[in-house]
Picture (spheres, protein in one colour):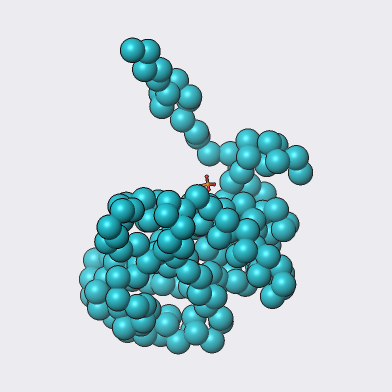
Length: 186
Ligand SMILES: Cc1cc2nc3c(=O)[nH]c(=O)nc-3n(C[C@H](O)[C@H](O)[C@H](O)COP(=O)(O)O)c2cc1C
């Protein structure tokens, strides 16, 4: 597909519609190499990738489900969010390592991790796969920190679910340009 056509029509597929085939190891390596090619003020590379293999996802799923209070009002919702871990053929965690730096604001490092996530969606699409950028309750819950076992100061910017789908994508509303664009004239 022409690049402009792709950018004009880009959409995510719901992770729960993703199925095999997922990317091969060389395809995934190519995607991640592309994804890391983002603006990065100071060339700090303040992000990294973790591929969560099915066995690791099963283990994490079990540990996370155990943290959900089954009597809580939102227990079903939390469980649904956790179950998404198991579904897609491939799941890549994009991990932000943004931290205090003498010159580069932490905010800019965090933005760079977001750029990596979007770039990974584009790279997956360009390889012929579908993808969705998700987060989940356990990214923000301190009790889940030992399950995710990140280094100090690391945070998950996105869980990028990748696979194939037979479900057609429909358009969703997009902002009219004049509602988000203005010109500063003086
Ligand atoms: C940081 C971030 C976290 C997100 N987390 C979720 C999520 O947990 N659940 C969800 O349904 N969508 C989530 N989304 C939205 C989807 O990635 C995506 O925007 C949506 O599926 C459809 O939008 P699109 O087709 O324009 O990509 C998140 C988006 C971002 C940027």
